[in-house]
Amino acid sequence: MVITDTLKNAVRLTALNCAARQIGLNEGQTLSDARAIYPQLEHYDADPAADEKILVALAEWCERYTPLLSLDRTKHPCGLMLDITGCAHLIGGEEEIRSDIMHRLAMQGFDASTAIAATPGAAWAVARFGHILKSRIIAPGDEKQQLSRLPLHALRIDKGQIDSLKRMGLLSIGCIADLPRAPLAARYGPMLLRRLDQAFGYEDEAISPRMPVAELVAERQFAEPIALEEDISRTVLSLAKNLKPGLEARGLGARMLELKLFRVDGERNSLNVITANPERDPVHIERLFRERLAGLHNPLEAGFGFDLIRLEISATDPMQQRQSDLISQTHCEDGLIALIDRLGARLGTDRVQRFVMSETHIPERSFGLLPAIHTPHRKVNSSPRSHGSLALAEPEELQTHDEQLTRPIMLLNRPEVVDVMAEIPEGPPLRFRWRKVTYEIMASEGPERISCEWWRDGRNAMSRDYYKVEDSTGRRFWIYRLGLYERETNHPRWYMHGMFP
Image 1: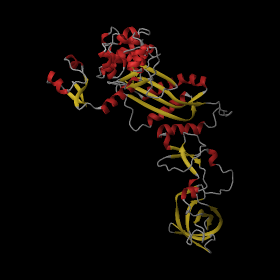
Image 2: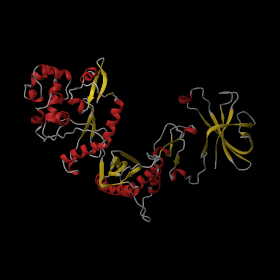
Image 3: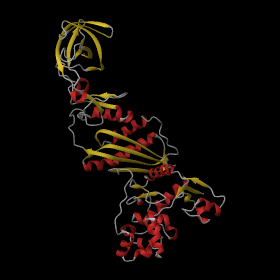
Image 4: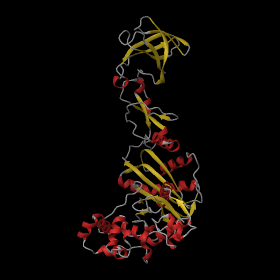
């Protein structure tokens, strides 16, 4: 079986299985030549999108071994590069971790070629061309000796350079390893020497992790997979307790946590929570993930169970010691913060919002809504609309301290037109009709003139004259006249904007 793609105006082989290689087929060969050798050849069109999708899925699965993982697209075929420094002993050593990876991938239907070395270049070379070597694990310091037998393709250099070297009779890495460096650089460029140095460990080569590395990580492996939510919650509590000393030593608290659950069959599930304040209480963290599990639209698919659970702290903030209540021995803000965290874990952090003030004098723009998980006193430039969200206010924001309200606490979503009777065009209203009901005004206060924001509404926008009015039954309203008589318009209109309690 082979994979084909159109290259250089011909359908050529781009990938082959072992059986195809054994009958003499090679990458780059045309499909017609391959069929001449083996007429019953099975071939399929290349699908780069599907290749990328399965490579990303494999990368997520391989995070069970190390979070330092990158996608390797330097040369075809693509692969994965894992930095297992400090991780191999958790499974029993380098040979055990390599065997475990190959065994698990084979159980999923993949035929993997792996290698372990002290440098990314050496590991890349041995994984693809190390079938002639006795071992796929290269000890530190043995890179030059072991790689000398491998072909030039193992250096990750261009095909043009490889062809040029072969014409000179240089067929393997050992043929150029001890040649004078200056002539090689002058003839083939500095990249050839750089790849040699990276493979032999003379030059450092770092891999770029596909995901940001977590600041603190704790994980638990299970001899027997678990599937019940109660077991998952107990594991989260245990992992959070393990992470607490590290946070305390750094004076930090977690702001973003991610729970990764690795299934036996290779699938991976991820759950994340964001806290309103820095947090390191294991009980509170466990409660947040319990709420997160309860708020999932689709139940968590455990399959045959999870054999590895990892808790990562991906974002932290400095955490100061707070003053406690001497009577209840609890922090004064814990009630509201805990409520925000629990609602955010269950409903989503973008659906639990907080009122904030905005730097504008236009009433309907003077406040906004931001996710309550963020800084409560942050200001915004507009008042974004939010559908199906829950808005919270700080207790001190709701207290009036017995002061007279100058603005209504409830505004209409959009000012509504009212019919008003006044003695003179610029005088206060005497009677108005709103929503088919007539109201007799017994007292009024105003006007409070509010000019337009010409930089936002344009220079033709009109001013407003607001009046606080009270009808015969004691109900109080906030209405305004749009436009200054004879200066901005000859026919000003009236609008209802809000009500007082």
